[in-house]
Image (cartoon, rainbow over all chains, first blue to last red; front, side):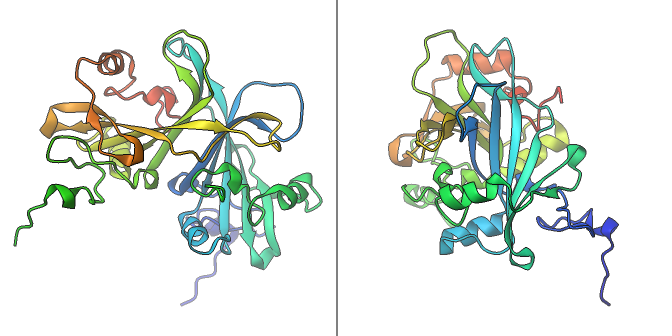
Length: 164
Length: 164
């Protein structure tokens, strides 16, 4: 018997890549079970004044990671999740920064041939489904021009760095 | 038929926790397949001048993570791996820091009842087996006094933070 997934059913799927009926990406709640690629600290691609300290952690689903290691390109249904966390504070830490447990902001960079290739989604608070970033947004052209491999910034991921 | 593992055989084990015949800890080569706990940036517990920027990434074997979530204490055979990476540089990155792909320095903090409880091991270059830190080293007393739970610094791991 075929099962017709309604929007509500899809919203609880464990799959890393699924959409709502209106084209938003469902929050991939198990993204931290994937492969950790790297963290950055206060990273920015444009000059500017510094703000409150932040960390960015990047994870990718394990099937995609294994596929990339094998073929050097990201397979279809790759889901890269960017998690942005505030820095925490603790009197015990005399120097440097650690990641706070405040809820992070999350975005996804996904490769889905059925949707025309790479796309960015920004999730709402409370892990609400992510709206598609318009294809005219800077993130698309910047990734195409500057990413080391297949529009993903593998130059910042130690275990995938092509210069390694 | 029982299989007697020689030192050479053990050195190739996939288990997260195994030792050489002379009591060193064998490098747990798959530690990045475990659960990523967090990253810190330039963290230090003592005052001092800043040095070259570093990141520290912490991973734990998945069985231990699941056990901790369930029971609130780390189960026997917990293997926490600290990976210290230099910051990289790239003209494209205008602010902040990312992790370089230079080989990291690694240490482990392991709980093994058969060896008297928690212990620290520092791995050599080329992922050589790790020597046991003497039980009189500061790391033991500091972790006992300042760690949030069971001698591990869960206060710095967002998904395990007891204050969360």
